[in-house]
Image 1 (cartoon, rainbow, N blue to C red):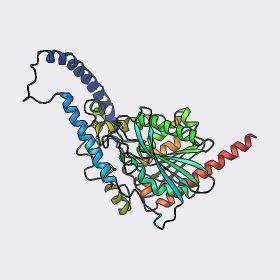
Image 2 (cartoon, rainbow, N blue to C red; image 1 turned 180 degrees about the vertical axis):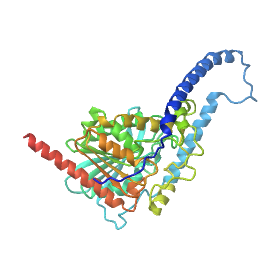
Image 3 (cartoon, rainbow, N blue to C red; image 1 turned 180 degrees about the horizontal axis):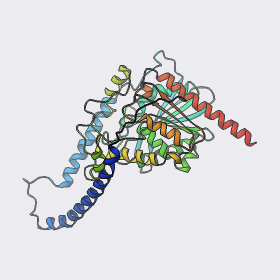
Image 4 (cartoon, rainbow, N blue to C red; image 1 turned 45 degrees about the horizontal axis):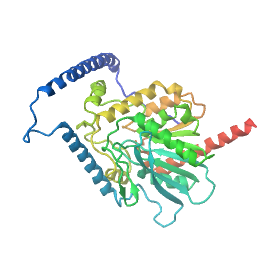
Length: 401
């Protein structure tokens, strides 16, 4: 596979700053713990001496919390209403030629959280394998309909799960379920990893004997790679495909990374208003950009504190464990990606212990590879790799006999 020469993304000064920041973070964590302990000691005493509330006084904390939840639910309802009738992704079947059948369903995760799911399957021919799509941060599975159609035309079935869900509130709209929750808020990526494993197990039980692959984009790629590190999940898979995975993510400023653990506990839903104010291009196709940023189900606001901390945490874990990766994988990255680091994908390929691994770097391509002008060629690269992996697995099985 081809590689490219790229300059390091960090300066030499970072080696001098990092030890200072680590000390600062330790100090801040200690101060934060002390303040919380002090507050827990003082709050009950203040409540005992507080005068009774009158009608003119502010609402109770419980009422304020209900008001926040109500605003969140109103936001969810507004998004679902806007999404009704919206044409998801790219439709290549306008000529009426239906080569796949699609279904929607509801899947309950490990915390009994309701998640909206889609599936596409070929209408004829012998099924080669199943690909399970784990989308990136701030998007949804409907954006991959064009990719799913190309896969079904090659006799692959496709499943996808909208993994962002918070309040376990699902409503029925036009025969479709939507995973609800505060837009752009991820309380724990470990929960997403667990839901991914449970979703895979259900699909395997419904399709015995059919090989399965996991596909993850960006943050979804990090989720897939961590999920595949668990032996009980790895043994259910033939391999994983990663596009622009979030393997080395750095905050806009080192101080942000130092204080993120504290703020993720104190104000997890707070948004960094100045984050990505100008926006970062993710595709060279203007039509794809327009489709993405006019989609009401795509979150385009500033990143939330807990969400950012979760991404930093999972990427840090993965970087420390590249050498432990044994799952067969294909990693794809654009060299001009400004959202995730293509050099980290190269490091994964170089360090992983997997005996069946491949990498492809696309010169000048941006972050959303499957929404670049060359999307069909990239999708074909993925299909070809899965076919190669299936053939290798068949040869290995024959050699055992």
